[in-house]
Image (cartoon, rainbow over all chains, first blue to last red; front, side):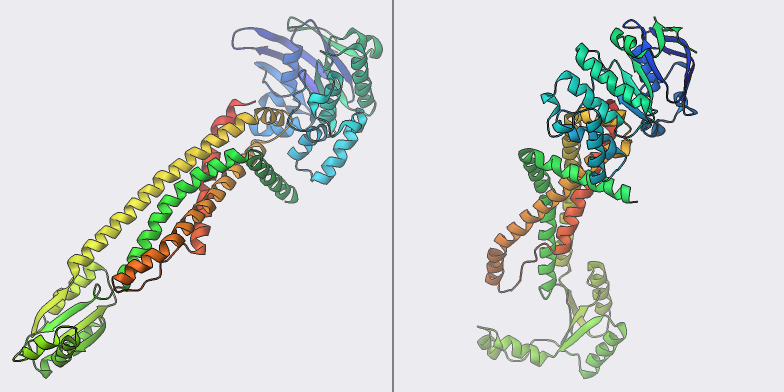
Length: 220
Length: 299
C-alpha cells in the first residue's frame, strides 16, 4: 500500500533529514515510526503526506508515485489520507462540529449528510457532547481527539499521525491510542510517528526506527 | 453537477458571511467602490442629458436654404424636385409671404414690417436631414449652395461642431475617468482580499493540507470580490439616481426659464444592472489578482 525506496530528503541549507530510507507498509498494518527528536520522523510524515517532495527516491501510495505527482493532483491524493498533525491545526474561529465538517465541505458533501457524518466521527472519539464548543474550550487531549475526528471523517484508508501525543498526559495519550487501535481493527492503515514508550508497551506494533535520517530497524 | 453547484452555493454563503462579519469594513469598502463608480456614471448621465437636450432643440440640425429674391415659381419647383431626388430627409417650403406673416406676428415686429415698402424676405426651404452627423450636414449644405437661384445656405455648423466636439471630449473624459476608477476599484478589492486572505490564513493552510483544490480555496474570495463590487455598483446607482432626483426640478425650472421643456433622464434599470455587473466583474478581477498572488505564500 505504501512503499518507500531509497528516499533521501536534503534541505536547502544542506542538512540531510532522511538518507536512503526504504520500507514497505501493507494495507491494514499499524506502524510506529520512532526515533530521537530530529531523527527524521516529521520529515517522513511530510513526505508521505506529499507536503514536501523527496530529493531523490520514490514513494508510492496505492501504486502512485507521489514524488512525481502533478501539483494539481495532490489535493486528490490527500483525500485518501487522514492527517493528524503535531500541532493539530484546528480552526479556532469555528466550533467543534464545523471543524470536523471541513474535509467534507472540501469534497462537496451536502451539509445535511456532512453533519451526520461529522457527528458519527465525533462519537467515535467521544466528543459528541462537545459539538457546539469552540476548540479553545477543549483540553489538550480533547483537541487531539478533535483533530483525529477531522482526520477520519472522510473515511480515509490511511491515517498518518505526527507525534499525536506529544503534549499530552499519560491518561489522554492512552485514550488516543485506544482510538487508533479501534481504527486499526476496522482495517485502516496507520502510520504514527511517536516516541511514547507507553504505547509501544501496550500495542507491540511493527516499528520503523529512524536514527539521524537512516532507517535502523523494521524495514521489512 | 450537484456537488459543483453545492460547492458554489457554499462559497457564496461563505463570502456573504465574511461580508456581514465585518459590517463597518464592508460599509467603507462599499462607499469607496460606490463613489468610484458613481462619478463616471454621473458624468455619463449628464452627457446623455446634454445630447438629448441638444437633439430636442430645433434649429441645430436644420439647414435653411434661401432663394434669391428674383427666384420664381419655376425655380422653387426645380429645388423641390432636386430635394426630392436627393432624399436628404424632411423638408418644408416657407414662402416669402408666409415668412413675412410670421415676422409680423412676432412681438414688436409688426410695426417695422408694416413700414417696409416691400417684402424683403426670400423664399426658403427648411431641410431636416436624416443624417445629422456634422460632416454630412456640411456636405449637404455645400450641395445646396451650388443649386441654381440659391442665394444662401445657412447651417449653424459652427455651433453644431463645437457642441459635438464638446460632447466628444466629455465622453472621452468620462471614459478616462471610468478607466481610472475601474483601476481604483480593482485595487480596493485587491487589498480587501489580501486582508481577507491574511485573516483566513489558518483556514487556507488546513484546507490545503486536507485536500482542498486551489479552486476550492479561491472560490469564496472571488465571490467576495464580485459580491462587494456588485453591491458597490448598486450603491453607485443609488447615488446617481438620488442626485438625479434632487437635480431634476431645478434643471427643469432652468430650462423652462429658457423657454423650453425637458424631463431629465435619469439612470435606466438597464443602467443600474450594468453598474452592478461592472462592479461585480471588476471586483472579481481584483479578487482573482489578489488570490493568485497571495495564496501562493500560504501552505
